[in-house]
Image 1 (cartoon, helix red, strand yellow):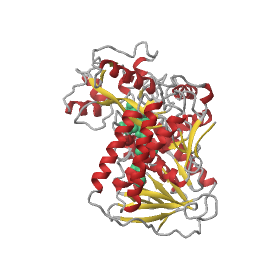
Image 2: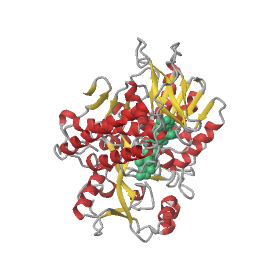
Image 3: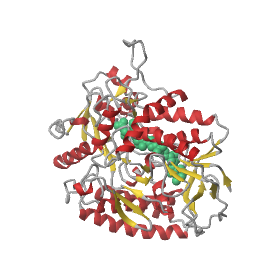
Image 4: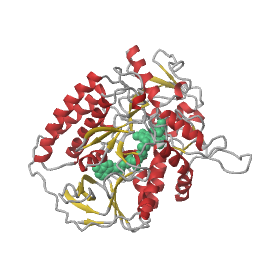
Length: 539
Ligand code: FAD
Ligand code: SIN
């Protein structure tokens, strides 16, 4: 048994930021399922939205966030996170994070951050490290964590299931006591126990066939929390990023929205800038609107992709501002200073998740959720670009502060060792990869950017069949990382479909052709899933 004061599942911005604060209160274990730098955070390009510009204000950032969120944001949460953002960004800088700065001497003699602009933002307010912001954040946080002897890293440790009093049959409020973890190096399941477990497992892009997310993004945290009895909110709101590179040799490579912030224009394959007339912000409209317009343009023209044109900018500018995108495209034979970039939308961000307040507190005692895995109410029905790194940073700090004021006692409960199936099957890999492909394709084809009730019902039937098969497989066989991920993606797929069927309207990222308008009766109503109570909605 591995005993700690805090178990942190995830080594992205949320997990590492929390660990750095929680270590002031006790010993911390950080688990991650591959290497410590393989996270969604690592791949973030555009940056962190925070008010630092002289022409900007918290009020404007709040307004843009609420407008993008299409009536479903929790305004108090939005105000808290945006209000506290600049202080948390300063802390990140003090830890060693290097944001890009404006060139040359400024009029006031001060150094100013170079601010990017992205979809839905009325001001330049995105702090960035050129176009590889996530890499720099991950570097700075990992370096800070490495200097703490009381933070212990467990790489290649796959969290399987949360251990709760309810699952152990202990008559008590439902309390999280720790987690069963597959040590992939040793091929053994270990028990980690602590009074506090923080879920910081990121999102679920891999539930879809095409995604900007790395392979680790299989929705494990949401699936584990659901199985443990936590409430899960708003899973129908999956954000599709409008511009993922369309190239057979590049898997999931994002073309940052900041390129459109510098005047890049979306065009169809006939060269027509089709966002004109769709929205006053044209190519820089909020993501839900741009992704739907692209979907419709691709269907209308029958083309496999659309294009992003930034050829009005010089090669020198593009190399300096977007070195990662420039070099990657060039390696694939596209000179973005001279040629248009072929792009397609791809699943990018999970706006829903484990229902948590702005301090990360969930409805299971001792279980907190922060970052993309959580649904706090910041994003509503559609996340404003670059607000997620901000949320991870602010909520991680608040979670540690909340725990300092509300310490949770260690439970005396006896935790049994892991017991599971023993069967091994040489066919397992084939079954897993076949089901995996079927789920991801089904979600892409039936539960994508534009939905219909009929397609959602078809998807539900298929996914439910797969769920039965996978559950049986899971209980009989020795667990492997692949099987665990399959079990989680099928659960998350089911949640997305159930929530989408429940919301009989179109709002933000959820667009259903059978209910094409927003229904005022659904404004401020969240779809909530719970293992025992099944599906319900709350305001
Ligand atoms: P992550 O950074 O995704 O970390 C998840 C961690 O959980 C990993 O360490 C993983 O190993 C671990 N984990 C998962 N499951 C398990 C398990 N079962 N057991 C053990 N460990 C587990 N947002 C912005 O605000 N600005 C941007 O510019 C931006 N650009 C983006 C670009 C790309 C290509 C992508 C994919 C996303 C981008 N986002 C951006 C979104 C943002 O990066 C993520 O929402 C954010 O980084 C999530 O951070 P996190 O700490 O919650 O999780
Ligand atoms: C991007 O750089 O386009 C991604 C920004 C985000 O997802 O917030």
